[in-house]
Image (cartoon, rainbow, N blue to C red):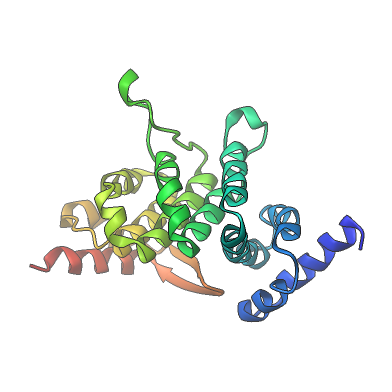
Length: 235
């Protein structure tokens, strides 16, 4: 099968509504052969296809790591390069895919989670230049979805790495989706925020479509704020 036909075949599979069916069919292909088609699908205009590609990359890179951990690292470095200004690209979908891969493979998480967190942080003084802050709101949305995903799978590790403060900074964003996804991540982190920090969100009409393991769920920003108020009131 030619490379173009192969890419079209993978794209056709990603259009399935049921993620379990997608994953089952994708598993019939050699993992390494799926990388380029799945990378391309991260830029697809269809939300379902993009996120199915994210889910498939999680399982695919996990399968690669089981055979050759260094090859899995090569894939992660490819994502990092795509997010680098010098690459000439933008890195659509890269933070989401990195997070999903880390959720599927703890060893990769332990090696690379600090890099994903660095995209929420500005550079500090010379001795603390570990930030790679992403400025585009659309990239921030993908990053915050990924951080929320990791907060679900590795809550204590994310608490220990101090991401609550990073997430709280996004609550001042003028992009309502960015601030909403920050609230989602804070809920999953179990963060305790004061009422004053959350007041402006309690009457927000904003709704978010959140993807989790093949399912899109609509959540409200006001509902997330109320959840955080409840968490904050717990002893």
